[in-house]
Image (cartoon, rainbow over all chains, first blue to last red; front, side, top):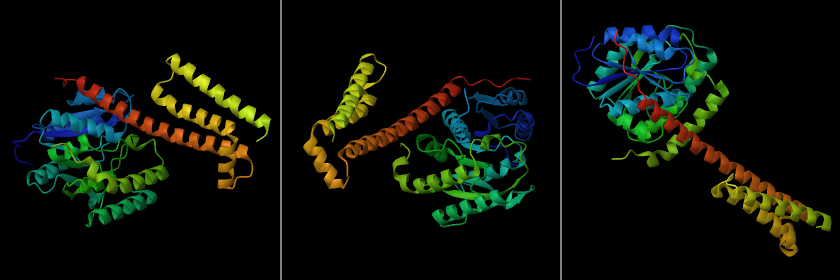
Length: 242
Length: 114
């Protein structure tokens, strides 16, 4: 477990129609890390996920309608900046990520290992069967990221990440994708001067796949290729305001 | 260009221009979006009325019939106008996203005390 933080830490969980898992998840985080605040961004759920999160003890911010997983995270970053949080650690609301591992991110952030810490299931482990197509896609984007950053990035699609205020500022002043904030975030972060590192995490089976609906695999690959390419071209325009 | 074709093109261009001006007058179309439509109307009108210019462009581009030059320019402008709309829609999407985020943060719920 982690020592008592002197800093303000926000655990951010974006949800979209995840009422089945969110309450237990929030309760578990609260139980493990009573000193941290939990913010759930309800991205226009229609299944009462916001109420479930509130019952679990989280603060809840509601989008009036579904904007996308990237937009939901970005709302959380805005919240964290305005409420003076030092670190944000975000995980998916579908139970894939283990709250126990939040402390790994916090420790890495405290040691100032990087501005963005990405939890990698390929450095750690995953306890479910990854569909073959998905695995190939992940490998492709891992190669693209590794090429852009000139060092190995194993899991660019991971939704388990931690960051400091520097990263939050860049993600709220400049570009942050509205949908699928995956490989292009890593590449654009690199070009915008953020330090990125991966840490091993354990990823379990998802209890839902709502946040990633709305796009087919082909659309995802097209969008990611275009945005990773564009990310590497436009970094200079997105420098944060001093 | 045959007289029939010329009358058709002039008629369409004039009709389009009248329609645009009337829509702007009724405040149903903003001036900033009207200019591209006005441009299309004017280009078609000029090409229909100024036969010398139309013939010169037609032979320059190697097009067989002058009326096809009118259609070609009309089509290119429609492509351009659609691209312009896609850019505007992207801007509006970003604005709606930011407004939704700001509204959500303004209405943030306090945590439930149990």
